[in-house]
Amino acid sequence: MLWDLLDRINIIIGIIVSLPVISSWWMIYTQKKRQKILIQSLEAAKGNRPVAILIDFGPGESENQVRLFLQENGINSELIKYSSPELKKEDLDNFVRELHRLKARAMEKGADRIHLFYRGPVVGALITGEVFSNASVTIYHFDKASGTYESWGPMHRSFL
Image (cartoon, rainbow, N blue to C red; front, side):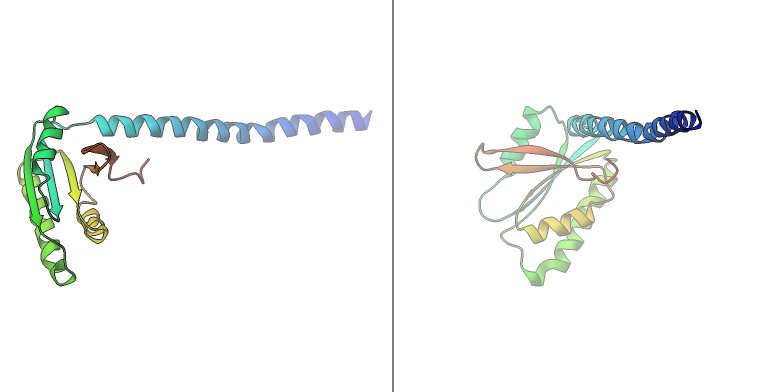
């Protein structure tokens, strides 16, 4: 009789202990779905006062491709451009200053969303990400296979 009572109490305690585990699993499952929906909505957000920034290194011209992309996607914004034939180690300080100027110009225009197009070396992309890290930025990547830019979503994903 005593063992039956202890067995029933043990079963109840087991059920009570398992509820937080099941609840946590459910929260994690639904969080992933909410993250995906949030990222999709941020990718689609064009902004009320968007500004596009093109940072272009290397041969050729990508400004026309960016303008075409903006037009095709209904993003009516001014395009601020920085281009240079190459990025050298000696020019990094000047490049960082120029990035801060670009960001300041976008903020002067009251930009609520920056559409950032970058074509160049990885080191420059890292520095660009650091400078624009506290702004509302959507990143675009040039896909060589399709010959156009594609949205890679918001720069910030840590809050997701």
